[in-house]
Image 1 (cartoon, rainbow, N blue to C red):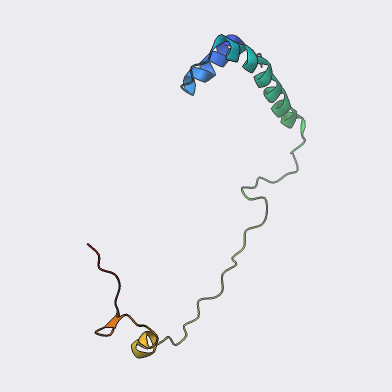
Image 2 (image 1 turned 90 degrees about the horizontal axis):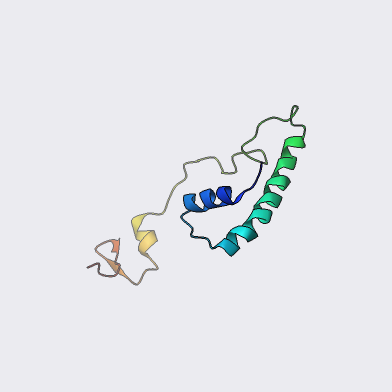
Amino acid sequence: MEVTKELILKVAASARLKLTDEEVKKFIPELKDILETFSKLNEVDTKKTRASFHPIPVKNILREDVVEPSFGQEKALRNSEHEKDGYFKGPRAV
């Protein structure tokens, strides 16, 4: 792909950037180098490679959902200093 001043200005306009002439001259060789580097990806043989959205296999790391007995209200409130009418008492919300 040929990198020209017009291409740089078009990309800058799409990104809503206002570039000076000096910046445009600076970006032409830089963008050319970037595109050449990415064009090397086209040389890689990917015919035997499966498409993947994750670089590593995804597996469930969560434990099974097992029903277990939980605290009762009295035991849950036992160590709380802020309790009223059988509930935790929090700061006033305005």
